[in-house]
Image 1 (cartoon, rainbow, N blue to C red):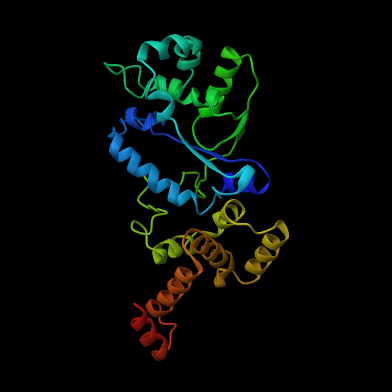
Image 2 (tube, helix red, strand yellow):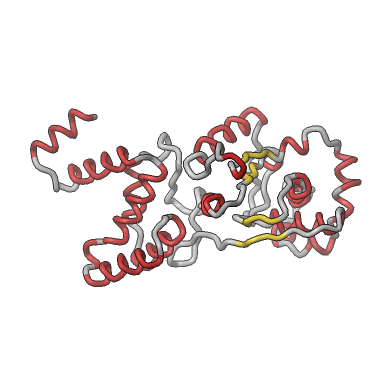
Length: 280
């Protein structure tokens, strides 16, 4: 959504995919190592991610059409010695030790393959022809901006975006809790996708509406006023679930999710039930 908003504002979105870093893991603060993936599986994942990104980014929009880049393309022809000589020498020990992802692994007996991910993520900032970026998760661009200053004596900037969290402060994520939601309909059906957002708590739904929909501030204020008058109608949740399902799946899938909800929760007539059964 951040890339989509930037594109609509006239910027050229560059979606950076982690093909190389996916091969060595990711220091995301977890104590366990991330499963290392094969090149074939990573390529399969990237192709799927591009199809998903195409719902949000226009890759054929002329001068500011979106671009999908893979950091594996920068690393596949670089030797370890060249990388250490040209990039590693610019990453100071103090900078590395200041990271929790490094501190938490100091007591292990071996050098984790996750450790140099910090350096790998900095490298694309030098070669992507981009002098500022939205920082979605992790610290890719702060590392990159430091590297640009040290190597090219240039300037680059990063825009930070807080993690999406629940009301209790825990983050949304496929491995953060038992609630898992995917953009891929093979993993999360449009109906379950709709129900996920329909079931958001009152104290977190407005934050999600602001982040994930195209509603204007005045529209959101009007919806919130309606919700306050009749919270049992779950107006905000319904609006969020509709906007998300239509955007990620389609209007037709949203309509089918509504039909399924009416059937399962007893809000449909006999004729509607029979027609729904025939449609499936």
